[in-house]
Length: 378
Image (cartoon, rainbow, N blue to C red; front, side, top):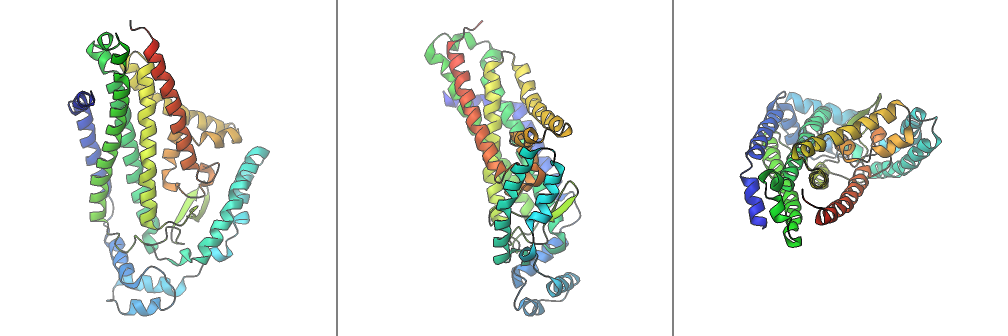
């Protein structure tokens, strides 16, 4: 049974065409930027001298060949000062965000609770001297945006679209082929629905693995991260702009660049799984497969529209809670595992939101399958 469903997917040419286009787009993203020469040399310097810019760091730099970029690093090493030891979350972050939602006591309480916990993490980052890591120096923000704001978001979006396409295609296949009445004539025949859902989900995950492996493999051949992997991603050279506020990249747990990337890829599995399950539910409930395919795109767009309207109407508690829906979590992917700013109602918002969505979709999927078992086929 599963073999037949997999065979249907392998013969589904739109999937292969779209997958090829995605790979081409990701290659363009990798190479369509100023050359990585500066970044790669910073990486080599960090690999030779280490990431932590304290102690005898200047002495370790002296042993390296002279260059303009080395001179930049020497200047940084001479002038760098810790920032987290004196960083006051209350004045720097809490006040800024609560002022925006000041007319809503509930929203103010949510943000105050979140940032009260952030101060403890900032104090910890000060103890481990995360702010003294070189990371990629002056090009830290540029390199992070290239990888996480552009490529990683593209990978997630591409897989979600393919996953929804595959799910609707498989679940609706018997309707298109005119064989639905044949399979639905017995209870055992109707169990093919479960086979289709599982096949679509596993195929979506397989596509995610392929896209990430190939795209990131090419990316890291072009961008040398060998001296960057162990840098603390909360280095003071790494900043993020939220609304009008520029702030350090404060994570909710210790993450090296490698650890952060692995965590983002792992959570991406949950994100694409929710997309596949959502599309399967729609495919089961909607008779017309073209309408089902359209709804898989319109429903996330509608959710994003509702969030935007809530923000415009200053319905702040509803706005903050709506940020837990998958499409908003995808948009906030570059700030996953951080305090999140105005993209997050709570810490670990991306994990909580996706696990909640996954649970709700599984419940809805169970109900949809039970309904399919009982309904008459016209």
